[in-house]
Amino acid sequence: MQDSSSKAGVSGVLTGTGAEELAAPAATEAAPPEPLIVFSHVDISFDGRAVLEDVSFSVDRGKTLCILGRSGVGKSVALRLLMGFLKPDAGSIRVEGQEITGLREEEMRAIRKRVTMVFQNGALFDSLSVRENVAFPLRERGGLEEDQILQIVNRLIGLVGADDVAASLPASLSTGRRRAVAIARALAAQPEVILYDEPTTMVDPIIARRMGDLIQRLKRQLGFTCIVVTHDMRFAERLADTVLFLHQGRAQFFGPLQDFLLSQDPHIQQFLTLDAYRLPSG
Image (cartoon, rainbow, N blue to C red; front, side, top):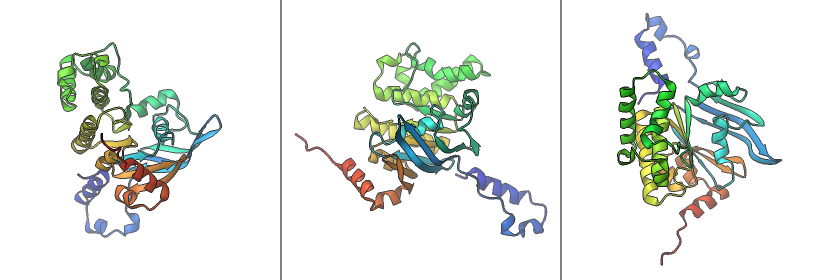
């Protein structure tokens, strides 16, 4: 699948008007596009305790970044900073080249139409059925007839395998089902980026595998850019293009998944060893 920069390059060649344009020196070529999301030297502290220190990373369009690390190292805080729920003490956060750290709440709402988050608890409306929850963003946005909304909702519910619970209330669903419905509702908002906060926490291995399959399928079919916070290395191996590993609030590693798996850093090796540990059966 071509990204926007490669499409632009092809378009430029096709619309060229003369050979002299094709012979232009490389120095005049457009610079590669900035990653869709960029964190630069971000710091944040709570009650005098540093949670993230000098953290930098980026995510290219259509790619999946997995943020890994043990509990309490600031993984979910990074997502909340990106959503504007928290403000950094220092550093820069950009979405498609736009600095968001100084935006007012009403300005952040425009960012949240492009960047949406699937919370651990699903954050569904308890008084609305599954179908009504998924329809909510479409009705809020407006511009669609009711029959169009229902068609979209039914497709999304089918996409996440929740057809059989469409009329149910969230309280009657398992944790895994609520998260699948939350993904459908996130998709209804038509975002460019989806953030997943610990999608396999408190679910059994079968549901965790299904969640991984679903996130992979959405990325492959719809081209979403994703950030997945997890401490589950097996889950990350299935999804990640790049990995950010946080240790004591710092970016201990940022780079391709395969480089992470081969890293000899003692903190990374300890994390991988503990993650692979299995309690004896019986």
